[in-house]
Length: 573
Image (cartoon, rainbow, N blue to C red; front, side, top):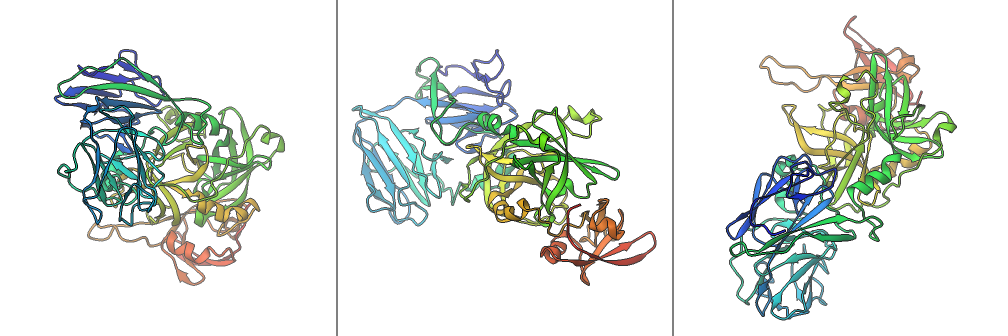
C-alpha cells in the first residue's frame, strides 16, 4: 500500500491496514508521509511497536527500508532502490577504518574476524563470521540483504538490532555496526560522515537503559521462522522516498525450530497450571508448569506455596481443580514442586521441555504464561485469581543476572533471566518460554526502586540453568531450608522518617504439621537468629540455612517479649 497519506494500522475494520492478530491493538499505530521520509507513531498500543528489537516510544522518522513488529506480525516499509552502478562497503571506525569492499551485481561478501572473510575486521567484539551482505543480480539496482550469522554480540542496522540468520533489506546510505566498528553502505569509496557512536556489547546501550527497559514488554516477530509475505498494493513516489507496506504473518508448520508467540501459547498452554495454597487466614495463588506428567509433578515458586496448609492445582482449561501435596521445596532458591495427589487426575498432562544449555541471547524473544489477577477477577469470590491463561511477550534484557532485593520478600537469586515480558501478581511460578517452546525460566519477581515504585519491564525469572542444577533434588523430593514458614523482612522508619534497614524477619504464615508448626512457632513472631547468629533479612537467613541441615532458629514474640530457640530439620509436610 503506497504511503501518500496518513495510514492507520490495527485490528479494527476501520483501519487502512487491518492486522488479524490478537496481540495487535484496535488502533495500533499510524504511518504518515513526512517529506523525504515517513513518520511512524505508536498510538498507545498495549503490546507495543518494535523497530528491530527496540520498542518505539512516541514517533520516529524513518528514512530507509525498515521492519516494524507488532504482535506476531511484521510490517516492512520498503524504500525504492537506488539506481546506481556501484556499491561499496566502507569501514568507518576502529583499527580497520578505511578498508573497502566493492559489491558488484550478484556479489556476496562475508564480514568478520576470520581470514576467509571478504572484509576482515580487526575488532575483538566481532565474531569469526559475523554478517553477510548480498547484492541483487540486477545491474544498476542496489538491492542489499544483510544477514547476521549468529554473531555473539549482534549486528546493528541503523541502530536497530538485526534478528540472527534472517535476511534483512538494506540500501545505500545505511549504517552497520559490528562490535565497536561502524560500516557504511556507500555509492562511492569515500564514506559519508559517521553518526554519533552507539556503544554496544551484546545489544545497543539504549536497549540496556532503564528508560528502554521501562518501555519494553511486548511481542516482536520471531528471529527465525518461515514466512509468507502478503504485499498490499504497489509503491509510488512521495517526494524523494517511495514506501510501501508489506504485512508478513508467521506460517504454521514452519520448518524452522522457532515459532510465533501464538504457536508457543497453543503448544504450551496444557503444561501451564494454576496453583492455590490455602493459608490459615486466606489463600494465595500463583502459576506452575508440569515437569513430570506421569508423576504429576508441578514446578512453581517457593513463595507461592510458603506456609500453605493444603494445595490445589487448576489445570489449563480452567475447569478441573485437583488436590496436590508438597513434594519438594527449596525456599532459598524460591522453587518448590507440588504433586497431583490422585494418579487419575494426571491423565492427559504433558511435560514441559527444559532448556539444557544456557544459550539465551540478549534481545531474544520470550513468552510468559501464567494466571495473574485481572480486572475481571478482582470482584471474584473464587480463591483462584482467574480462570483464564494469560500470555505476554518481550525480550531478554540480561542473562546470568543476580536478583537481591531485601525489601521484596523474595530470597536472593544468583542466576536469573531479566526480561521485559509483563508479569504481575499471580504469574509467580509460571513458565518463561523461548519461541521454540522450550522452558528457559520460572517467572519469579518484579523490580521496584527504593521508593517502592515498580519498574515496568524489569522482570526476573529463575534461569533454566539454575533449575537444572537443582532438578535432581527437586525430582527426588528433597527439602532444603524448608521449615514451613513464610518470612518477610520488617522495615521501620527512624526519627528522621528515613527507612531503616530491616531488623528481623516476620513470620507471616506457619503451615500446620510443618517443622515450624510442630515446634510451636506462630504467625506474628519474628525470626531473629540462626545458630546463634543474628539475621535481619532473607539474604543473611538463606546464607545460614541453605546447607539442608538441622538448624536452631531463634524467634522473638512481641506479645510476651520473650525469645525462644527451636531446633528444626527441613522437610515437606
